[in-house]
Length: 352
Image (cartoon, rainbow, N blue to C red; front, side, top):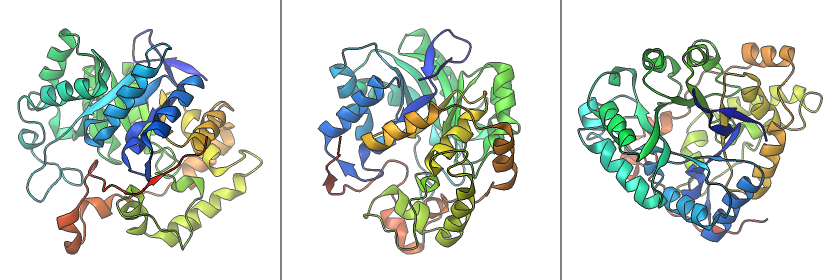
């Protein structure tokens, strides 16, 4: 496992981090004991950064339980403060005023609950989960994070950008007031490489790349007949979008296999990590087989410059697949799931 410094500190974080959204039935439900074993497996393989959120419901509790059972060095734990919703606007597709998303005291309350669920004394990185550019210098959220740092309840503060809107973070990154930015970076959306990542490098702000595999789509798992269980995050993400066009674009990437990567998943992971400004690639690790493959893929290092440039320039596809969540059909409004409100599904048995 390769490691890099977090922000301007000497703390080392793994360049592959455990995305813990999958611990709460986002991508299928699994037995809790198996999930804990998956967490321990990832740590055995060198992963030391874990990314969760208050919005992910049981994720923090399960992660906290796994950490308590772990005999090794405590990992670097990230969480995110949960936003409130306005009537008929959860705040992800269009911003709510800061007074609605994060009213005074909301960030502190979210952090206190996260500490309780994780069963730890300090969270290494607390992020604002729903960051919009117009939240900069507005509201009390940053002041609350600073107070929590001075109290030792969190060590660092960062933001998580809403979907693909990378440049909304430029002002706050250049202000020097945050330690990290989490944003989508993958083959279909490499725009963070243009302006955001250079700004982060200049200001010693760590970059946490998420959706590196585009919720699994970049692994090539989609077919015209793919279905998902009700409540699975991917049901609305993929099936409300242009599935055939997605598959066509994935097929175009197969020309790089196996000369430049052994699989599409490996290609996607190595593409994101090729840029030195990406601190860590946050990937779902709750399924042991895929976790092993993803960690092994990252260990193969960056793509050659010509392949990286070709993919960056000629395979981008700037299409927002989150629209199925943001602007649901009228009949879906009463049963919207938001970010963490996943319906419980039948538990599956993991194979170790």
